[in-house]
Length: 214
Ligand code: ATP
Ligand code: MG
Image (tube, rainbow, N blue to C red; front, side, top):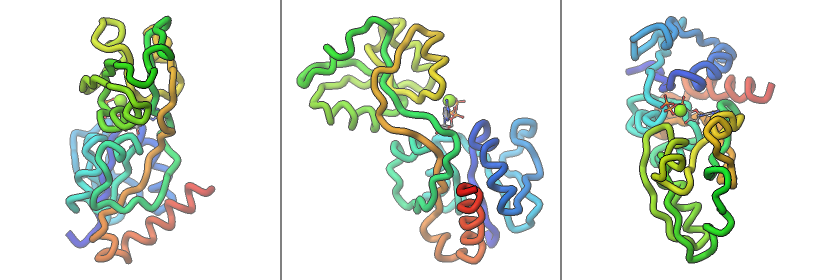
């Protein structure tokens, strides 16, 4: 592939990336929300988009199946970042990775050093590091979605999940008790592609950086 392939997930990352693409002169030919196509052309014959699951974006870029991608810091922390150059925080899809518990649960008592807590999350690596830093034993339960349910049905004492407005927590009688890390989406670039296709990639990085500053 001589052109440039950009990996994006549909939903908020795709939506919030559209203005950045526009700043780089790139307009997708289809809307992934209304199309079942996984490879989407653009107004530029040398640029195409591939639509992937958010968690898979770093993998496509790491192996060079996409030259560039846009991924949440939450996803990058779990992936580890091998083979990826991360030149730019795009400041989009902002939220925070948090610990939340059912209202009334005594979190302060539970997190004493040497204590033990059961935590449900899809962010196993970030959760493990967070509780290890407190000198606690943590039993991690891997979930793939709807983490908010786990404390309500006794699957876990706490969850580690993304929060933006807090509306979902509130609707489920949960409260945020700790922020682990602020989250936004980053541009990621395959390290080999950056060297081999710099003439294509660098102008796009510059246009994105300009749009983020504006
Ligand atoms: P699904 O929710 O359909 O299972 P997903 O969780 O893989 O899919 P999204 O919910 O679209 O995908 O999240 C994609 C990325 O957007 C996340 O990795 C994160 O960086 C960011 N994100 C997730 N939730 C929020 C939120 N509430 N506010 C802002 N950004 C968010
Ligand atoms: Mg989601």
